[in-house]
Image 1 (spheres, rainbow, N blue to C red):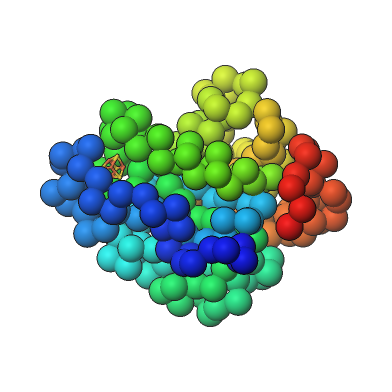
Image 2: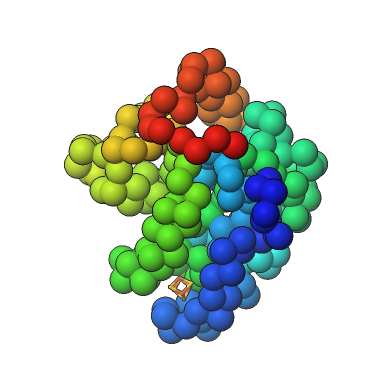
Length: 211
Ligand code: SF4
C-alpha cells in the first residue's frame, strides 16, 4: 500500500453518488469504485459488481465468485486476508470494474459502459500499472480497444485465459469470468503468473517509478 494512501476503498475519492445511468441508480446498492493499493503494479478489471460486491461496496467480495478471486490473490501474495474477507488487505494490486453499478437482471448497456469509462481511465492513469487483468470477455474486449493493436473481436477470453497479451504500455493477462472458472482454470491462471510473469522482469514493459 502506498505510504500516502489513506484507504483501500475508493482511494481516489470518486463520486459515490454518481447518477449518470438512471436505470442503474434504481437497482444498485453501491457505486463500487476501485479498491486496493494505488502504488500497485497489477489492476484487475471486471465487467460489473457481483451481488456480493454490490452489497459490500467492495469489488470482488461477498460471494463465491469474489472468494475465488480473493483466493487466487492470496496465492500470489496480493492479499493477506482470508478469501471471505469483506475488506481484504491487498498489496500491489487494485480491483475495479468497467461499470461500477449493478443491474441484477442484465449486463450493462454499451451506453452505460461509455458513461462509466472515464472512471476506469482515470484510475488507470493515476495508478499507471504494469499489468492489467481483464476478467471476462467484455472487459477483455474493452481493454483490447484501448491497449492493443488487435481487433477486439479477435479476442476470445476462453482461448486467451492464462496467457500474456502484449499491448501498448501494458501487458494484459486475460482471465475467464469467475463464474465460468473451474478450479483447474483458476490454478492455470495462478501458475501462468508465477511462471511467466513473476519469473521475469515484467517491469521492463515501461519505465516505472521506484516503489
Ligand atoms: S455505472 Fe458508472 S457512470 Fe453509470 S451511474 Fe454507475 S458509476 Fe455512474
